[in-house]
Length: 252
Length: 107
Image (cartoon, one colour):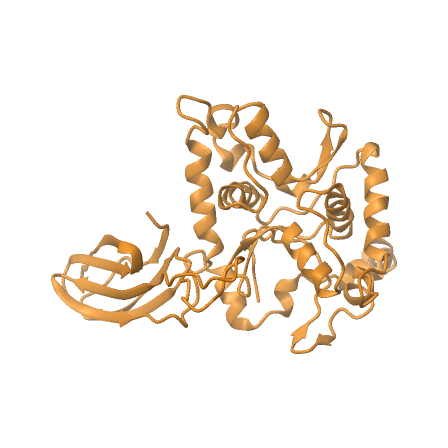
């Protein structure tokens, strides 16, 4: 019985209050939607994962190199990779997200025509790669070169924008768990992207979700792939560090 | 070929009631929505789903424009004999896809 008081003393130091209360959007969904996500034969996101697996093993251009040609079996080599993104990209000297890395690899190393953001093939490949990290904790890299962009992301998250003059933080920090019309406001942790949204009737990226929120407050969204999105993604990954990856998640 | 996810139980005993669950990738465009140019997008949906077990049709469904993209269909059957389960989706623009799985019944 002796270790008990020591443990009690240590527990509050290990986890801050905010970390203890973090919730994935999964926990706020209806039971039926949770069941949809948890069953791999009913989760519509798995259709994109299957498509991504086929693309992974197929040469990007006839006679060219496939993803598997360099990276081998994704189930082994891509395990945990998506949980470390966005990461620093030495080639461009800027942070890059997972979809950006796939686009870059395709253009620079496979010499294939670029995949547009939010195209079906890019979503499928991102979903397949991110699916290999399911269950792994989100682990943002501690690279000091990322801190400037991460701070920019934190500032963008707290900045009021649009005709409604609302910041991300005002909903997802100050009012998370309360209701906006019929839906529960989630804490905004990017645990399951790319994810299948019932409203979209399709798979979509975190950037699509961010754009949805921006048009929702009647602000002009940034263009797909803008560095501002990658900065926000960096900050969100830091905010959700340690939470488990759920890709492909299902959300209402 | 559209991607398909099927859940078909294994290790089935004679007379057992089993649930077959199917999910198919399809955009199910209603035919009522305007596109970016203001013109109505032509309808593109799955019209009919049929399931044939050991040569006999055991389940069929007519799908309508109100059904969501990537339709999920589940139905039950009484497993009597070992035989093929043929699932067929037919729709607009010549969409026609068939998947065949063997149901193995053993006492």
